[in-house]
Length: 123
Image (cartoon, rainbow, N blue to C red; front, side):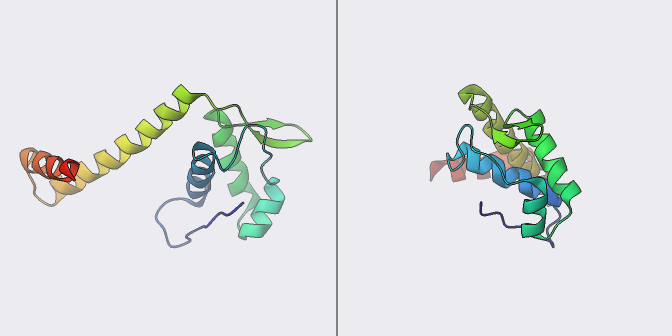
């Protein structure tokens, strides 16, 4: 499993890990019943704390992307198309909100932000 951690990013490491695993599931790189690396082995491979990996795995399970079987490991769950679509919409919404806030911080009016959005959507 190819995971890249950016230690200088403002995004917490566990979120980086979660985002990359979610992307692998959404893209079909990880399929239903695929087993994820153990917490300890992934922590060792990425040179991060096992607690960080555990937090990412726990959050993935809460979000319905994985299931952990005690003593066996963490597996990718069956993909619910609606849940995946909703997750993707949430990510886009978060990015759009960040762009709007940045535009406002730069002094752009809402109408100017809409114009920019419309211009970008034309491409």
